[in-house]
Image (cartoon, rainbow, N blue to C red; front, top):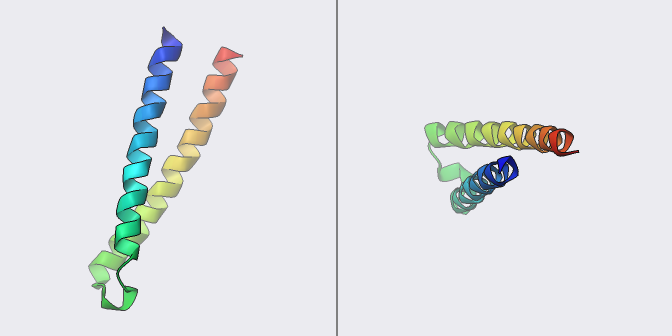
Length: 69
């Protein structure tokens, strides 16, 4: 039962990451020179947040493996 909740949570997080990746790709398609400074700042913040989420996902994977192992 607990494994099902963990798997559903991981699936939702992975889906969110996929949406973030798709949005990032759409933003990257525009030349950076034409981007307003605020947009560039948001893209940089997005990348930092994405890295934080990826690190947290790795931590969660390790924690789940320890609990299940």
